[in-house]
Amino acid sequence: MIDVINLEKHFEDNKVLRGINVTIDRGDIVVVIGPSGSGKSTFLRCLNCMEDPTGGQIIFNGVDIADMKVDINVHRRHMGMVFQHFNLFNNKTVVQNIMLAPVHIRCQELKKVKRKNAWLKFANLFKGKDKKKELIPVSVTKAQIKQEARENAMSLLKRIGLEEKADVYPSTLSGGQKQRVAIVRSLAMNPDVILFDEPTSALDPEMVGEVLDLMKALAKEGMTMIIVTHEMGFAREVANKVLFIDEGQILESAPPKEFFENPKNPRLKEFLSKVLA
Image (cartoon, rainbow, N blue to C red; front, top):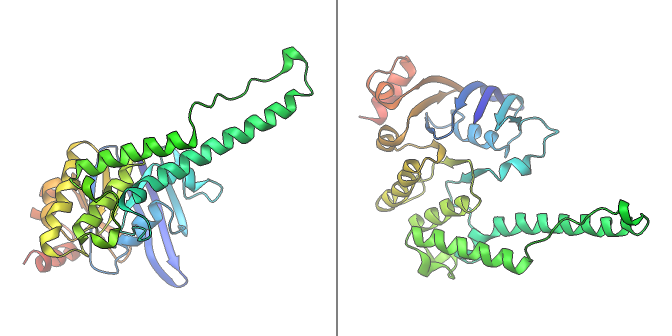
């Protein structure tokens, strides 16, 4: 699904990523670990082009989304992102947060079709009967789009046991509840892959489990996920591939059993000796 080829990211003289190469297949659960400042979050932000790569390629579903000529917004619809600090809109209710992107995208598409039809109607005025072009069928209204998005959002909230919180504002939720809402907000777009940037690091310890449980459930359903985390137990249990990044390079990549029990890179051995102590 994703081929990262010689990915580089520089901030002036600071070379944060120095030639990242990795392939992520559909259904993979890839956990990325490494010390602070090693480039893990920058790697994720480059994957969905929140940061423009300095060099290299990111082939996502056959398209190089690092190419500046590509409309990245089209491809971002298929790549969800869950942030460390939730990034919910505090002036919108929980259900409005989940509905926002699907409604916006579908309404934009509806507008395009209506504009196209208006142009076709105008052009048809000057054409003979047998040369008139048929209008694009419009089978949905803006109100129906909003209703369908709300029904889907409520179904997602029910899945995580928060349907009664649909019409409250994020400020009334616990950290764990906010992060679960942020995850189902990504799911509302039916993404091919979800990127998680340290999804539990801003949570109180007792709230971490409820977020990890939801991520485990997604893994069992076959969702492709790339997760930057410090949760080593989660990496052992759920990942099928673990990457160790340090100083902007992947120093080791292996299945979790081999990665944790038989690390080969000296820097990884040193890192694991500290975090697993």
